[in-house]
Amino acid sequence: MKPPLSQRSGSITPFWAMEVLERARAIERQGARVIHLEVGEPDFPAPPEAVEACRQALARGETGYTDSRGILELREAIADEHARRSGRPVGAERVLVANGTSPALFLALAALLDAGDEVILATPHYAAYPNIVRAAGGVPVPVLTRAERGHRLDPEAVARAVTPRTRAVLLNSPSNPTGAVQPREVVAKLAELGPALISDEIYAGLVYGGAEACSALSLSDGAFVLDGFSKRFAMTGFRVGYVIAPPEALRALQSLAQNLFISASPFSQRAALAALEHGAPAAEEMRRALESRRAQLLDGLRGLGFELPAAPEGAFYLLADARRFDVDSRRLAFRLLEEGHVAVAPGIDFGEAGEGHLRFSYTASPRDIDEALTRLRKLL
Ligand SMILES: Cc1ncc(COP(=O)(O)O)c(C=O)c1O
Image (cartoon, rainbow, N blue to C red):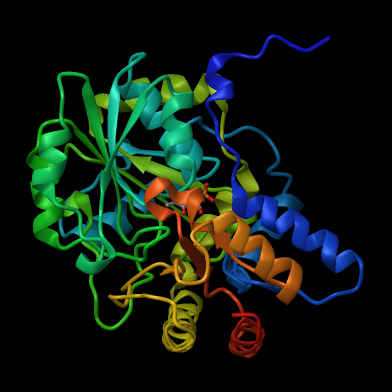
């Protein structure tokens, strides 16, 4: 018998990059070598100090629940880091550690939204955003950004999208999938708009060519800032992220966290703390490597005829206009996978505005990026 699934669950769309990855794994099982440019996961190891801290925590028997807000030392270290980054005081009482940035976003939305409340987000957007908004009972309201303008968000367009139901504006700078870094004046205008500003800064630190990503915390104590260890420290599997919120919101976030997730894993939190304390050199080494791969892939894709009007300044993605090859991004991505064994994410994952595009993650070695470009040249 078919279970009576909710309309809400039916509104959650599949993540095509994951479907590409799963098909790529099947092709690999048949013996072919696939080049992976589809997933948003650094191909670097976690900082060794983080791995060691995790090992030691396990050996000490730190295997139980922690405070639902996260272990105090970690919250303090996170607060210190953000105080440094933003140039304003940030106290540990504003930090809640979760099992990743995605759960932290869900907690922030669950604390802010009633059923039917609206959340404005720039599109093309991170694939999960509208789905997380819907899962929290909200309605995503996309505001288009354009490649010709470097995907800079227009605060006037955001203001026009505000209605009496708008509860939050969700910002992601540097952005997945566009790599765009929003200028300080844009973040400042969004912070003044009225609805809560939720700023997902998970790619902070991953900026290139001297770009600077402005933290919402440097402009407003009212913002909800999300960040985590998955990207900058290459620690996706540790599952640690956090939200820094206005102090008045903490109690609501904590109650939600206690009920929904109880706590993040203790040994992962120890690893995260070690990453903050000792991981900066490894993170900087990774950033430098990504910067040079970005130039390599950008030149290579432009040479093949993909349109990339502005060089993205952050994260580790290029969202390339592929309409001269095929207007259907899913069809094109699966053709490149089946015929060329190059895995990329179809742009439709990132909203209607991403259709006709492909997202390339430069989280593969320079040799593999070269090999992918050679294979694409043959196919296209
Ligand atoms: C913009 C953005 N936010 C959040 C996440 C999820 O991060 P985490 O692994 O911390 O849950 C991702 C992962 O791709 C992302 O791109």
